[in-house]
Length: 158
Image (cartoon, rainbow, N blue to C red; front, side, top):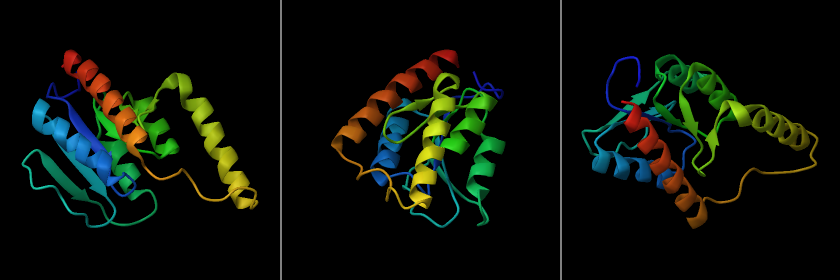
């Protein structure tokens, strides 16, 4: 249960989250009746549903990340692909899920951070380029399955 004793809330790091993943969260929110908070550093199109709020934070490095860490409560879920952000959230007791369906937790954070740092170094040295491939059907399905599993777990705790 979160500290406010309220229903589950799902936060989304909206600048980097694929539209298909955002749409999936909104679909779940309409069915399961929870609030979705989109946090972004720039204006976004907000789905026209009362359960969705858009929070645009002043631009600046890590402004949206800092907002998420400050406002998401233990027992809530944040959708993000940013590994350092996920690490900060997990340490606070917030559940973190990437848009490709991989849950961040204390058991895999060290490995995820190390891998992220390795690829950052390799990119800077010009040994690899780009990031993850396009967001496809497999990613959408893995995300939907993980989202369903995590929401079920969190809603049992409320």
